[in-house]
Length: 248
Image 1 (cartoon, rainbow, N blue to C red):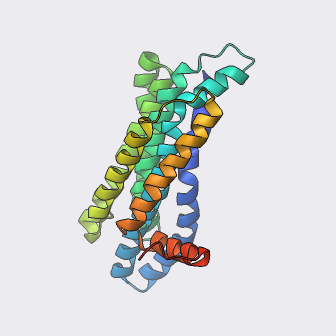
Image 2 (cartoon, rainbow, N blue to C red):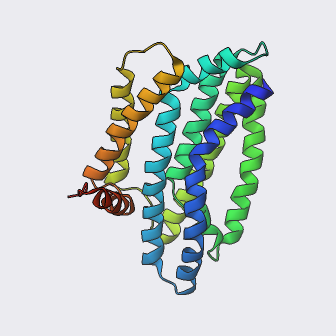
């Protein structure tokens, strides 16, 4: 069970990798904005980080979840151990959803930790440890490793909810806009339409086909609806080099 859970943790952690890279860029900028008491700059960085991380994290989450059955088939085929990989599906789902909500909340933790209220950030981080222990104690005996994933999801949800409410009350800033809602709709659409594809036998070929279809639906819609200025600028740069302007 630990081996299967560790594999699920590794798969879901991929969702966070782009957010960590963006955070490394954004945190020094937030620190500088606090030094200059530039709340408007912090609000802008907060919103940009949230939507960019949601777009990229959402794409990775959909890519994993739409292919999860094929991934399980490959794991069963290549495994030399008698593991029951069927439980990994919803472990990945809850862990992935937790990571997605975490990245969609933007750099809330970084904003708090670089402000004069950094001690509050320390307190809620410590509280997260105890909440995780408590929820694991409740759910693992009932649901096993799925319960551990559910406990992690609840803990991250509460951590980000408290951070969100703190920034909203103290500084009147929050990261969500209508584009957040549109991104969720686009994600659901890409997932639903890809799910209509017939299986073609080979798990690897299915993964390739479904991943390509997700990309071909998700990315153009993100660009057309101008969800992210940064992603549109990148799409324009790439498409112009190819010989046409995708963003016009």
